[in-house]
Image 1 (cartoon, rainbow, N blue to C red):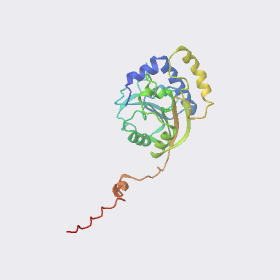
Image 2: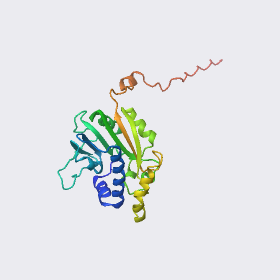
Image 3: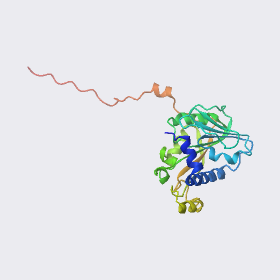
Image 4: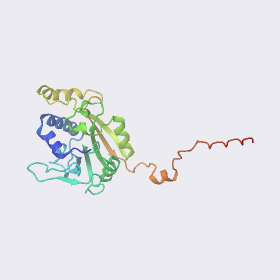
Amino acid sequence: MHTDVTQLRNFYYRSALGRAAQSAIRQQVHTLWPDAKGQTVVGFGFAVPLLRPYMADARRVIGLMPGPQGVMHWPAGQPNISVLCEETLWPIETGSVDKLIVLHGLDTSEHPAALLEECYRILGPGGRGMFIVPNRVSPWARREGTPFSYSRPYTPSQLETRLRYHGFLPERHVTALYQPPRGTRFWLKAGPLMEKAGKTIPAWRGGGVLILEVSKQVPRPTRPGLGQVISNPLKVLEGITSPAPEPARQV
């Protein structure tokens, strides 16, 4: 279920905890992708807080926001680059995107398979995607009051398996949000130190969100299609023998 864009805006831009979360996630994203000079960068879901570092040098930056979530003007005080779109039908030319960031998109989608097909379509050969989802074992996925508690959390294997099935090759993975999901002054001050310490923890452990970088496989790996499934239907009664006839009764 999608979180309303007003709630997302209020969390990331108007709450101390949200601003801390934005900073921690954006730092990890920027470490993996330090620049995008001359490239087309697209964010889907509510990825606009992570797009700002690329606006100076990228050829084009677009923030796609799904209809059930709603859209807001972004960036504030500048020409708008955010677009309201269908969740699985984007106004982007096929193969035209170099970098794609998905935040509050895959984990909130009611049609994740179709969404990933659209992600694959718009990425160009050699294009890279970055999927950011709640970590199932983290308190961020369970504590109410943040956008991560209203979506579908993933384990590392679940996320990798789903992306591989749709033609993406996992490249690198990190985590972020090691601080507890609490907005008290103590935890907010300790947050940067905890994020720094978290980088020494083995990947996928402890962080509130999983961040997986993938590349687009070309040619796409083949898998059984609908036609093959229909031509070989599952025989639910296979292996069950017919009942033996009852012996004739003596009169």
